[in-house]
Image (cartoon, rainbow, N blue to C red; front, side, top):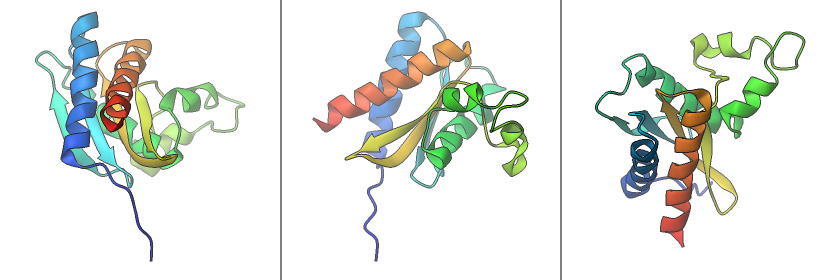
Length: 141
């Protein structure tokens, strides 16, 4: 039998709140997705002005980060032609995202969920996702 740590809705809200605050600070309305340790959606927010094309992208960034237990920016670095993960973005029906903005969420060293952010540049998406993770971590202390 396994005991699994899992994000709850309060955790998801802390992640979204932290990400939203950073998105407001940089002036980019974002789509923010939170998934559980299996990559299933727990919570989602499309800020006013968040791009409609970013809805599924944010969800899939979170899914990817949970699945590979790494930030999606790491996959971007190894998915160019000739690199070991080339072609990864076309797997699993195109759900694997190799653009920055998806991060795993850790608790006690284990992946308990993920955050995916989209609507800005890859660097902005990553910055906003990192702010969400920081807010979650501070909420755990």
